[in-house]
Image 1 (cartoon, rainbow, N blue to C red):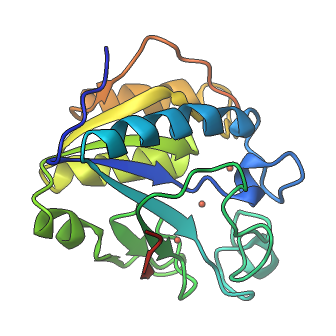
Image 2: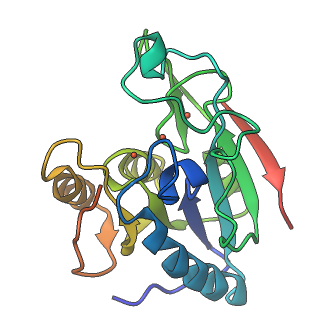
Length: 214
């Protein structure tokens, strides 16, 4: 399936940051570096068609219960201002940035933030941002399939956006074998379109701050 872009479509680029996409990253997603070329290609198509591009960016405080050092499940990663939190240098920047995890919440989804201890969720500004710009459909690529990509896709569907996931432009953490495939199945069963039959799960996520990179 070829993805079609137009002014009513947004490309959501999820967490293509050094700590996830670089082999030197604190929470490297196996094969994560491979998504950059795919994402850049899609950014080019999106911009040419007048579509919106939005990047999500983990931007954690140094201290948060999201990290294993304070009882969470993940190693310290994407600390605000650090090398690991920066987008990979090769990533094309052509849109808005929504930072997440800025108050120590999980917020795997670009659309919501979840407290890692209480489980209480609250919306970010992403859905409102998309609606203000007349967006009806979202296309999602980035990292990681079984966490931030999946949660962003499921929340996009709940918010009423037609949702396509670029399967060649995502990679999975696979904490448990098959997590990536199960994430694809869950997204598809919830109504997301998968852009291709390529399903190679590899081995990775959350308050918000908006930055305009144009």
